[in-house]
Length: 155
Image (cartoon, rainbow, N blue to C red; front, side):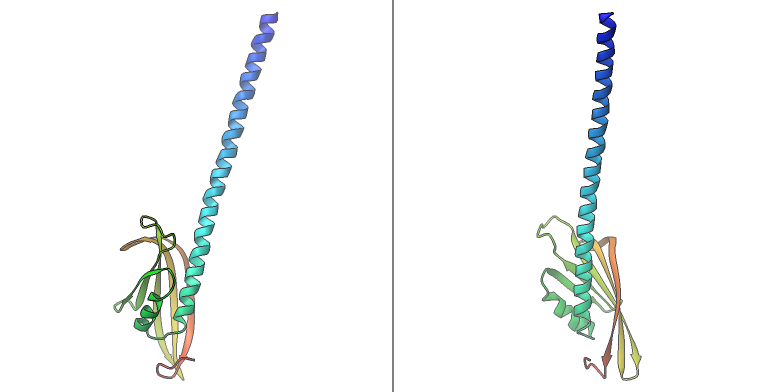
């Protein structure tokens, strides 16, 4: 009879041990998922800030070539290349300071429409993860516009 009690105790102890292991695994998965979401939120916040900074800079200049030169002087900008064919600027921001890390690429597309008293610039700003020469996974996009009065004059 004593032998049956010890076997029951060992089986119960083994069951509790397996249950404890399952709880530990579930808690670990929650923490790992939480960490991934935190990193994703941090990247989204950075992408929003970069898009807003680009939109603010774009609102100050009608000519995209001059805007590309102005963007090259911004903090964290590695390059700002104007593409005449697409009417766009490709901007690469170095965000982590790590040469092997991912950077953020911002693509600004502009379309101008002439209106009474000036022209209206409609900008579409897209933020991607990028490695040189290729864009991956769009993170954020922003559409904005600005009215420029007269010929080349800023309002």
